[in-house]
Each structure stands twice: as structure tokens, then as C-alpha cells.
Length: 102
Image (cartoon, rainbow, N blue to C red):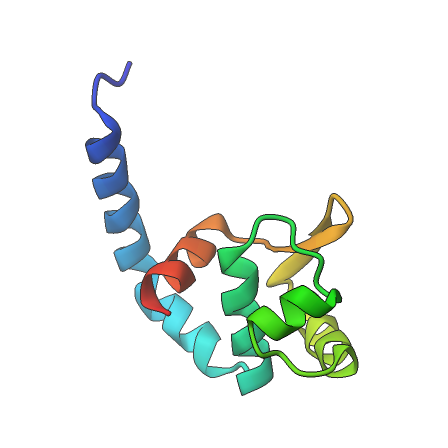
């Protein structure tokens, strides 16, 4: 049984993420600028409307056609998946790493 507090949990998560940081950096470096920008936007939102004008403009993602192409590649790499009618980052630790780093 765990008797820690929220600060202990955050510290443990940060340790886990820092241990995986080199893996995340390697994955990140393989992505195009458009894919990186989309991953940052997905990391900041919970179940975003990816093709909505507001989402595209908020994150400066450009036309929805280029987002479709980037999403297709991210799905193929298994970095994102569809959930609740939206797209989310598959690895929650990677999502937290992106939020923290970018």
C-alpha cells in the first residue's frame, strides 16, 4: 500500500520520464516539423477536434489536409490512436514528456 502524497507521485513520474528521455528524444528526432507541432498540440488538449478551425489556428497547424497526412504517419508509427472520436497520444509518459519539454 502506498502512503505518499501527490508530490511523491509527481516526483516518481518525473523519474520514470527522465529514464525514458533518450528514447523519447530518438522518436522525436524522427518526426517532421508538422508531426512535432501536431504532437505538441495533442499533448496540450484532451480529445481535441483536430480538424476544427479553432484547433488548427490555435496551434498554427496550417490546412487540415496537411494535418491528415501527419496524422496518418503518426498512426502508422503507433504514436497516436483514435479515442472518443478524437486522436490522442498513445504513450501517456511520452505525452507528459512533450508537455514538459515543449
